[in-house]
Amino acid sequence: MHPEGDRTAAPSPFVAGIACRCPCCGEGSLYTGYLTVRDRCAVCGLDMRRHDSGDGPAVFLIFILGVVVVGMAISVEVVFLPPLWLHALLWPPVILGLALILLRPAKAVLVALQYRHRPGEMGAADGDGG
Image (cartoon, rainbow, N blue to C red; front, side, top):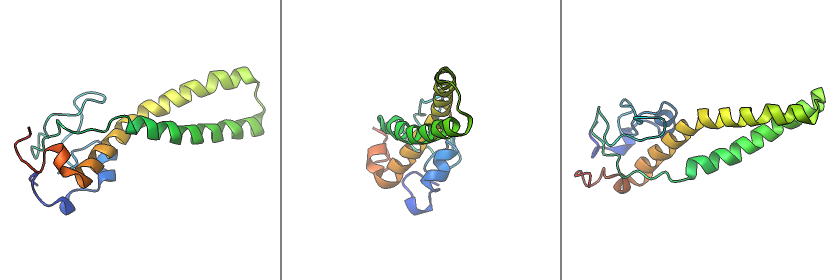
């Protein structure tokens, strides 16, 4: 599919995001590194230099992980009654691990949503990439 093509035929932003694939074709890799978005899709040529997910992925993860981890910590406290030092040792690595695992797909979903709903901001509408 060409970047200037029909956006309704593009893959779901959530499917493309979770797979960390191009929001236009769903095949090309979105990242060159851990969180560095490619300049251009190797498969369809979509110009992704002007994407802007900002701090959105981190903010969403802070809220989501806060609820999930606090719920898990309360459950562990009620069921096992561990000492406080064990909580202090257990939860920081859990939070860090979940944040590192979920940050890439969260950013990819926001890039795909931006492509779907604000195509002009990613350069897909003008075709020149600049």
